[in-house]
Length: 123
Image (tube, rainbow, N blue to C red):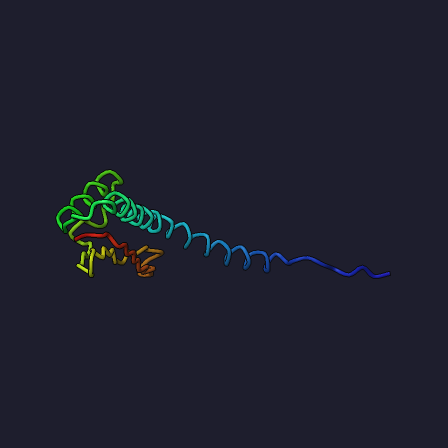
């Protein structure tokens, strides 16, 4: 009686390892970008919580609070001047929009766009 073969060949295993390894490498290169984004998003959330109860907020106070939290969190790829603060109705709309690049190999890079917006009340 003849036995049927089952399994994967060495060539198939190498191709599979190459594909999985490529995705893991891209993921490893992108993790620091997302960790920085999480710091920035956390900063905006903290500023929203901190200044949310104070109806006499000003753009200057919001920028100072963001700058203080950026110093605490060691955010270095964005400054408080890069944050867009617009007066909207009875409050401020605070937006952080930026792009970050993760180099992969040679001239190949990955561009990631980030955006986070919070609303801070004011009179």
